[in-house]
Image (cartoon, rainbow, N blue to C red; front, side, top):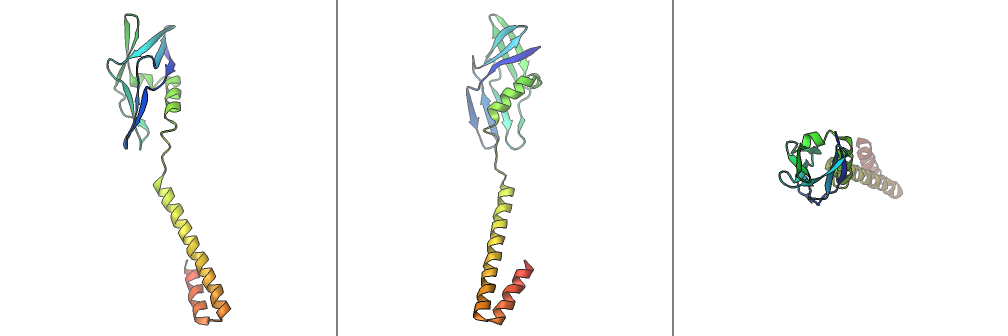
Length: 147
């Protein structure tokens, strides 16, 4: 059994489709059998997360950890099963996973436009009453009830 002693990204690369957490030596270490093993970039060097699904895409990646002359190869899928790895990773990714939802934004804009149109019709009804223009009054109140 192992646990994460330290997990800090060397850097994070944001792309349109992916977020890549690039790892480097001495920024990632595991505690295995009460000994600290440091990540060495011999095989996989990054964790790739797809933005739209927020899922890790390269689960088959193999990370190598070293202590002295001993090496341990661990698949990313196995690392994902460790609770503190998930916590470290979610902390790292939290600022990057906040994506605006365009549908909600569009709905909000439509709602504002509808409210502005309604307010404008109310103003025109008031104006028709002030001018005692019966034709405009009926026209605007009919449009108002159609909304």
